Length: 573
Ligand code: ARG
Image 1: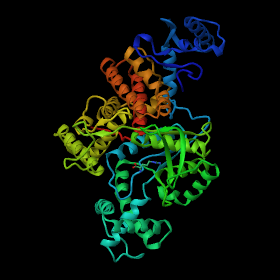
Image 2: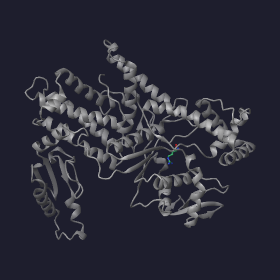
Image 3: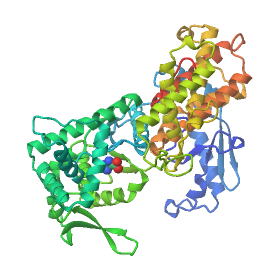
Image 4: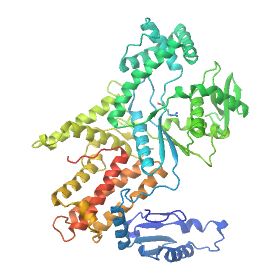
């Protein structure tokens, strides 16, 4: 249930409590729209008309507002009627979807995220795409859309020629039937060693290039080694996905390899290809380099090899034509913004998608920084291994929990609780920072029990559970008996209003593709809950039933909200 219809005029949450609950600034914009023939010069007059229309149309059944006020040049401030709010929250109390209606049209949403690289270590940058992508996927699914989460693995390309050539030199006994012997860590070392050799040894370079050709033409030994390499890497990243509770479909770059010649043929047929220094390029308006020269998108190199961009064009075409996507989302670091702008522009030009029918978005994000404010590195200067980072958070969480529960540590499974808290903390720290900014990775900060942290939210949730245990009232029974929430005290009204805004917040999260909208909301919800809890006695008060039920709606929203962030609740902490 939406609290207000927002399709015609733009009504947003009030920025200050003295402006009521919602505000509308549309009069100032409408007055400038000559095409509307409003024949008024003063936005206040438009505001008056809007208010009149709203009063006529919306106030009919139960009054929605206790006050609608026009302020300044034409701002409209709305204060919701408390009875109306009570009726909405009581409806929500009976609704297993917490007031979130299913859409008229179920969209097919393809989300490209995580997208790790084979034979390279997963690093902290992959953490962001994985966590943000997973959260968006969860919200879209809950809103009733059909989500296909794709792991666009870096599992193809010249680096495999290098690696296969290298493996053949150190394990010459390899055949189609005798597999590669290596751990994922060794693989990463080999990758580095092969790269070095590739750059310094001309003979090796030629070998590597021949290996790429052999692989692409389906040589069985090369293919076998390639598959082995992928399997070894897969074990490493699947361990991380399991720990983080990430479910994603693997569809790496190699999947599109058979489509690449056809993509080039289609681009050629559409006369979009220009040859420049032997390479096949697409020139797109508006893309120039620092010198002001036109910047080409290279889709086939001089030697016939294809690029990252070629695969992305093939992937986009496949997602539109075969997957029938309505919305395609790429959760990839901000460093790749230009790449995606050019790929999208080229795909539009090639009519791989119709922008009026399919929405395509790059969802960029900033860097993870170390405590020194620089790009996150280990002490030795290497990129921190993701698995070590996660294990570190779990260790810290355990120390903290043991400290808090010195006396009663045997009452809970400390390892389980520490794993949940540690992982929640990492995920929440990432999601709660506006994704466009960089953020500083700090165990101490993310594991704090106060402030905008996972622990603070979990604690609010745990507290509600303990109130419910203490009062020991059968809540389903209470609801079935027809007991109602009555919002009276300012703290109850403020909390109730937030509970009713859950659906709106999810819409905003998706519209802006911004998980921090949801974390901000849950943080405010937890804060307002604490305020309510301090001011309004639950146990033994005349309003016990109403307040217990209000707590239940908060707990339900909190539980659902945490799960949409990919966080797990704790019953005690
Ligand atoms: N594997 C790439 C990287 O780690 C990200 C791929 C993103 N997805 C895409 N369709 N290009 O940088």
